Length: 147
Image (tube, rainbow, N blue to C red):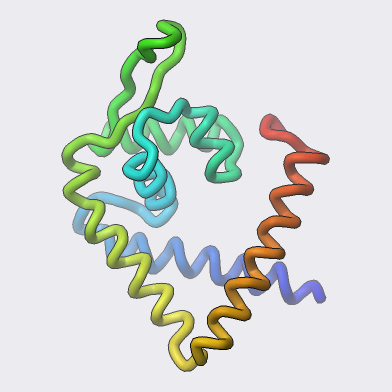
């Protein structure tokens, strides 16, 4: 069953490559897409909250947020609740790119699932949600966020 995680890795890498190619004109690379989608959906997250939501370590989240900030896609603001805390918000540039981000994700999903019946799609999604749930539970129980 080693081929299972190998295939997941292939799909993940190909997804990032496809997104990078499609979104290059906007100045967005594939690895930044989850950050932008999350921040557009939940503006005002802290870097730590972003890291936890995306299952990445804090240093990776910090690098991506820095890169997105330099490119003008996000901005950091001091939290009203805790002046020591910075919250991250999408800029107008990010919000303007959002429809193309969503379209790129949707087109890729459709491409990957082309030829699958609706029943097969539903079954695959259900099984992948179970696998993802087990992976998340393991990380939360055994590893934590600062691994």
